Image 1 (cartoon, rainbow, N blue to C red):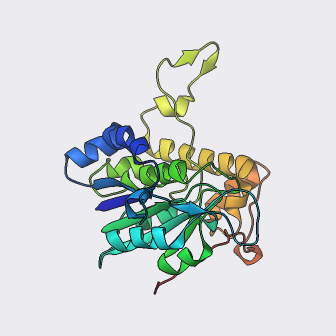
Image 2: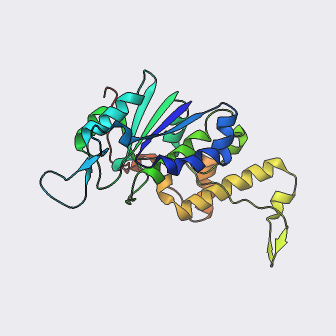
Length: 258
C-alpha cells in the first residue's frame, strides 16, 4: 500500500513515518509513505499557495489551481483522494478498515482558513475527525495514517485488532496486568481462573456495560443478540432497538467519479 500526504509542512511527517509501527511497516515493505510539499506545485517564484478570499473575511484560502496540480501529480489509476476537512463525513473505524485495503491513498491536509471550494470536484471523499477545528490537516492526517496502516494485513497481529474498541461497534472491555492487587484494587477473579469460556463471557459483558455507560449512542440501531439484551437489562441499560435508529452520521460528500 502507498500513502501520500499532500501538506505544506512535510518535515512534520519525517519522524512520524520513521517511528513505531509506521516505521516497522515500511521496513518490512508493507506500506510506502510519502509527504509531498504542496508548495512544489506553485507557479510563481515565491511559491505562493494561498490568497485572500473573494467576498472578504479573515485568513487566507488555499488556491484551487495549486492544490489540483498537486493532486493530479500524485493520482494514478489506483488512487483514492481524501480531503481532510471539518465539513467532511465523520471518520470511523469502518472507514479505516476500508482505507487499509486501498492500494493507493492520497490525504490532502489543508491549512490556513481552508481551501477553495472548487477543490472538492477533484477528490473522492471528504472526512472529518470530529466536531472541532485544528490549525491544519496535518494532525488529522497523522490520525488517519495510524488508524489505517495498523489494519494493513501483516502490520500487526490480526488477533490484536479483532477485539478492539469499535471493531464490533462496542467499546473494548477493560484490560488488566500485574500486579494482581494494587492499593486494594484487585484484578477480577475470572481473568485469573484460566476458564477461557468464562473470560470471553466476562469481556463481552464488560464491553456492553462500558459502551452503555460511556457511549450509549453506539447502541442506537445495533443488532444485539438476545443474550446481549439480557445482560444490558441486568445493568439497567436495555439498549436501543434497531427500529429506533436515527441518522446520526457525519455530514460530508463522497464521490465515485471526481
